[in-house]
Image 1 (cartoon, rainbow, N blue to C red):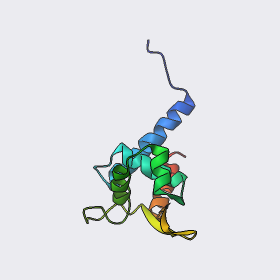
Image 2: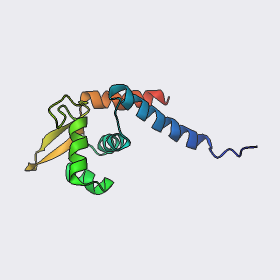
Image 3: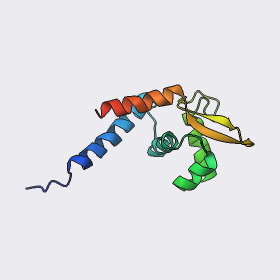
Image 4: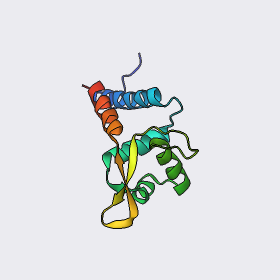
Length: 117
């Protein structure tokens, strides 16, 4: 007999991860776990900077920039991105840009949360 390792909360958390990955793969079939992680961090920390994201997720600058570009309107290769996030000017520091979800990004979060209800 196989011992059941998961309780109800464990199962709920796995459903969250499966829903999140499934929604991303439907939008962008080549989605990586790192892109989902970056999107999730931004969704939980809107208004923070790319520097904050790099520090929190321990990412090199090149990885963060490449994945943020893919999640934004224009991919680094000039191709359309996912349009889930955007950079906005920081009103307190004109040199800084803040990361936030677009309307499409907010809709994705709402759809994922609906999947769990």
